Amino acid sequence: MSDRYVPSYSTQQGKELVMVYLGSSTCAYANRPEMPEAVERAKLALQQKAQENGFLFSTIGVSIDWDTGKGLAHLAKFGLFDEIVTGRKWQGIGARQFLWTGLSATPQVLVVSRMIQTPTPEQPRQSYRVTGNNEVIRKVGITQIINWLEQGAPLALDRLAQSEN
Image (cartoon, rainbow, N blue to C red; front, side, top):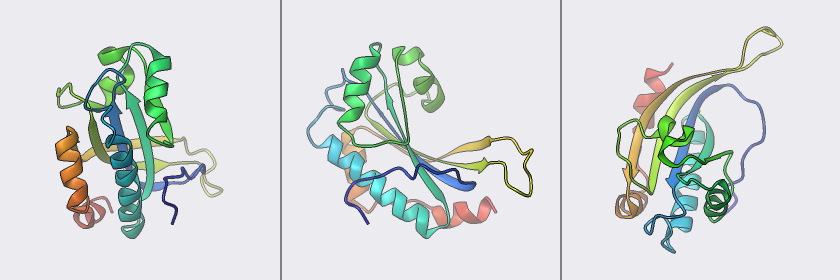
């Protein structure tokens, strides 16, 4: 296993666990020196938990910034993501998609579960579909994120895996 997260770059279908990092180039806490390593640790811990429980895994980096260049530069400090979203600050799609609770704060680590459906040889007309986006856990602020990691990034995936079968 690598000491850095590497996206899979492949089309797969099934249950997926997604880690979303929400930060900002203008947030003092999201720019603390310990945050990039904490986010990398979260990616690797969650990837391992996903694999152990039969889930696919991906990551999304969201930077809540007006300036997309500054948002991209902020996310670049956190290693590789499968997807990145930035721009339009709190009005952007990243903020609207992943801040469901109305808690407008960064940094955050959000974990969601969802189902991925893709065309297969047996079902070539099947559309690409993503359904679910069920919140598994959300950690807001550097203290919550680091404490959660120090506890081993616990998730109730066994219960979640059974409920999605």
